Image (tube, chains in turn cyan, blue):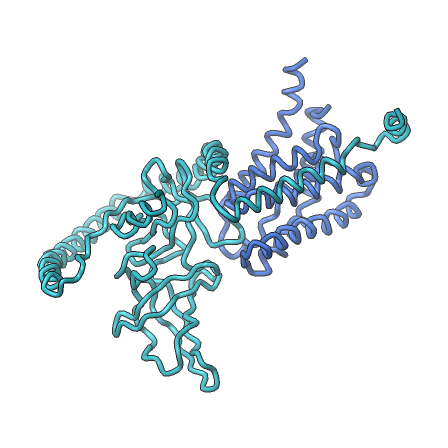
Length: 289
Length: 163
């Protein structure tokens, strides 16, 4: 009664607003707590995410259309040029591949002699990057495949030149992946030249990585190629990650200041390969148990 | 009656879908940090115009959708948006009579509060992001507010959407 009179006197008053706000804040905090701790809320996320699919496709469509226009209006001359370039490239890669097959066979034989575990050739699947920006606080991208294509959390993305990142949220039809340049991303690598093992950490800038744990007297030079070491289990070994582009040794500090440039062109990739490696598959099986 | 109400709600829903798409639209790396919080601007506008049908609850649901689409912590944007909606609904009579420059000056600290809440939650959850990720949207949002405001009020008076 009192409340209704108050309402009549004050037309701007909305009843129980503060109470509703407190309730919602409480629910939000509970949600965030459970979301951060474990993955109980994955199904909620996935079902709302699936409803977002048409929206993502709509956002992606103009860019895709533009690319299609570009592809279908290139001149005959340029197409012929590109065709001959591709033919030459194919010849070259095929020649290299012949050698690779022999080397692979030899490698397996030698590994058998050493009684080491065989390196299995990784299964890959090509995925397209959607022109959709996701999390503003992370370096991330959205790809057009999801759990129905067999994508899982932690799966590795590479492009033609090197490691791009890993899947962090596998949705039903689209998934979100974190780039190796994200500040929260770290990746075990080794120097290809001498096998020096270290960790590469993202800096938050798209074309730079940092190696914070290189001691001052370590053997590392500008131009060294860093490849994944396979330690840690998420990344299969032997994929190129970055090339060292500066080494600053500071005598009074324990660690040198080393930065590297990602091998993959992170800013302009359109297609990536998802790796289904043996190690990752077993890791996933362990998770499911 | 029911269909009438739906057709009146249509502009709101369309504006929200457009806002969500603008939030997901790819931007060049140089200006990506200055993407305004479109949905925060929309929540402020609609909460100011229709405080009875449009209040903390609606803002919270939009926030959850935003959280899913951005892949942030579930509830992060929801919490920040419903706080913004609360402040707007609380002072909507005052804000309606503000001239545009003064209203823009009011929206600026509200956007800053919104980003502060996101920053705070990120801090608790251990997510690092460069400072410009937080400041960029506040500045661009305040700059774009008059445009959004005029566009939406124009649309609203033309279609007489609302109650």
